[in-house]
Image (cartoon, rainbow, N blue to C red; front, side):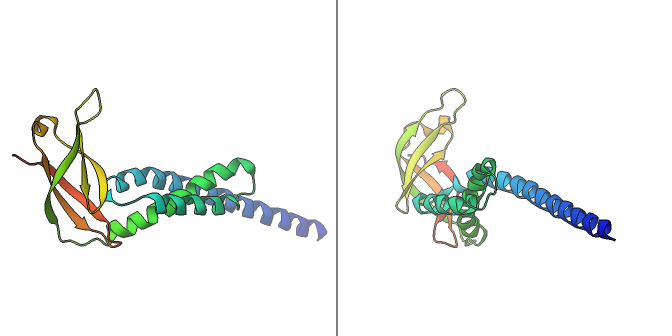
Length: 167
């Protein structure tokens, strides 16, 4: 009887450790996917990233404090920071207006195609500067870019399409 109670406790502890292990693996995979998806989501958004980055750092530190082992603290920090950074972007994009606004904006700087990098231009819209990829052949002497944007749920504009304007 005594052995069965001890064995039950060992089995229960092993089962808990197994659940925690699979939770960490799933959380790590989801966080890694989330971390790389941020780069695709934030590129077309006109916003100031300082508040999101600061909130990400704060949440990353808070989440890292819950890591039991020292080797897991960096992963937990990156996971917490990526969630804090991506949640506002997701809300802004997911609940954005369906109305597309077309505007003609001034090109601030032109960056020609070099090697494997694509041609791009710097523009300013809604008080935020953004680097936008363009077609190198059409860029020529053009001074304006025609952009199509939607207003996001949090008020940040999302770049839908861009085209070099003919002068």
